[in-house]
Length: 293
DNA sequence: GGCAGTCAAGTACGC
DNA sequence: GCGTACTTGACTGCC
Image (cartoon, rainbow, N blue to C red; front, side, top):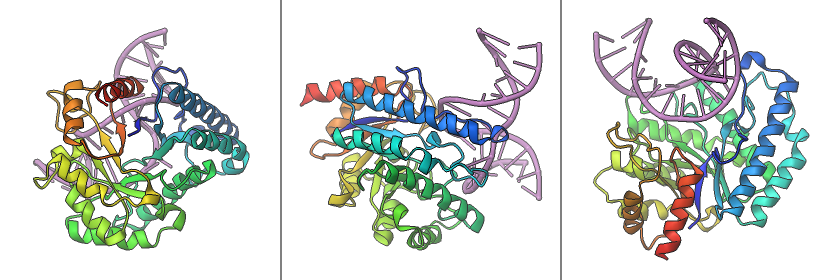
């Protein structure tokens, strides 16, 4: 099991997700921002290696406005060497990097415009991973999307639109269960229709399920990962006490995490800790896991 | 320097 | 049909 955290390292001063307002766009600002973001990503990966963290989610803001029509900056060519070096580092140390485009990415939308924009954004994500030169275990994780009043038809639309996606996106795309609409069982149906692997989000599962235990859900989702997809991906976060179900806690709740480990014993997977204090919780989780083993 | 409002993008829901 | 909540970190304007 590799343990990771998303996008930001709070122990470091730099951020790999610096952006700017659309109104401020210029090629110069774009170049500087991307250069700084890539340099910070290098710092983060070095920090991770030094601390035994081999799993990391790269921020979608690495290249701001990459899929926006305003972007006329050939970042792919300008920074190809930087990407190659970063990817070489990832591969050399057997790390896994993934990406998670946000809620606006909907390939089952009703409006053609939304699908077009989503595909552009997915192509950008695939470009980043391809430029790094990392293998197909490095995934792009999205949710199934909206229900639009008819979940079944919306799932069918997902699978139909999935078939039309560029191969570079298709081979990296995975779906994650969400806390309101698409449960693990729904994602399994999407898997049946498309063949794509399912990421299990443990907290979402606790809020939205059909009675499966966590272990049963993990057994189901694990079966969707082929050898070339790598180990199954699992997202875990502690529920913030007293807050709405699904709200991420500030720090890892060790008691809850122990229970999670007990419930998932016997399965191997890579674990993404979606906790606000980021790498600090990842380090505590690593320590706990090594003590148990 | 600090704070509050706002930011490319969407859906769901209540009125 | 319209406004608002959802979630999140960072930018931006204002004091």
